[in-house]
Length: 103
Image (cartoon, rainbow, N blue to C red):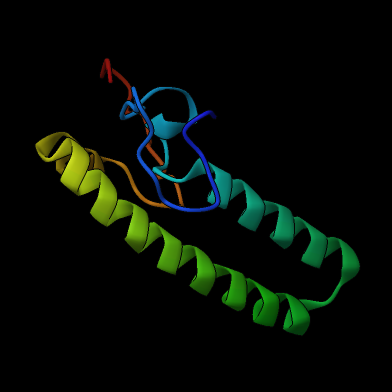
């Protein structure tokens, strides 16, 4: 994604993306990194180390997410507020389809 960077910035022509993986989570890159870490922990069989490392990584991500949110709220206003209300930050919601519904 051309909008991603190590530091929260708004670039010229920056858009609020709501397609692709952003339909499910607001931070798909962070989600995938945490999923990869979980897979590594399961494969290596190091649950204590995984929890410690995962906790540290999650703390760093959370600090960056808060910084990004402030910048995106200032830039996109109500559009970003709506996005935050509708789409979870890191873990997608499970949607169960009920028979007879077109959702």
